[in-house]
Length: 347
Image (tube, rainbow, N blue to C red; front, top):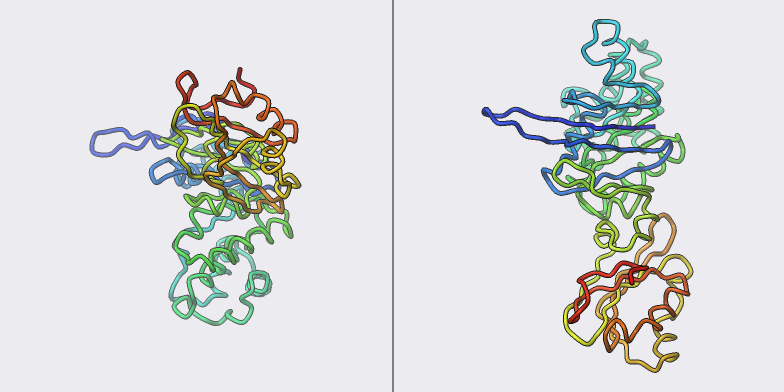
């Protein structure tokens, strides 16, 4: 549904050039919720604004629903009309709501339909239908100042859906909200994704957002995507920075004459007593240094950091015992002759 190839954006500021996007390749499948995560300045907002051409990319291409939007940019009146039509099929939700204070809630939702030339009767019908969809049917005649932050964002979402978009872009839509309201907005986005078949691309710096509703995710650093894939693939990738951030485990991983393992559990394995089985089978003392467990996409996921006595070479058989049970094992820490991270399958 969304593909960017070699996407670059360079800004000029006070005689200097600043590269916000540096050759970004992104692939978002139809009907999925895709999260792009990264710290401030990573290029996330530039990416999402280039996807709907609120910002014109310096180079590269943006294809949405099979249409190359970059080919329409700056190519004359006809191309501009086509670009406007293409944009109408891409909804946008902003961090700070961007509602017009002088308009009622219903009038705010109707605004995109006014721009599209929709009749007044149809605008009203559509706006009230969308407000009911986001749970604000009783607020149609209220003004933004009378709403809570979560209600304002629901109005923003309803407005973004006015043009019946296939794609919804969300730029830090929950970062100005409290945790409880954030959960309700994320649940609304997931419900809309399922009910309407919407493809949702969301920008965030919060791992909990990715954990809550994303099917796939990408990590951005310094204008580049450094890691991407489905959440399941990422969790199954040894050494994945995103997986470690989604399920952080603490505990000292240094020291000699011991082996420190990070174990990732998924699905049924998350409820199996494999650590106690390991201790009994090999008669070894195991220290649990840290653990985290949560549910992602209805699947229980957990990570645990444990310590085995002895060097890596002394623990090849116990580690094999764990891997035979379908667990992902990352060997971390450092002994006299081991690297800091031994990926699964390394000799």
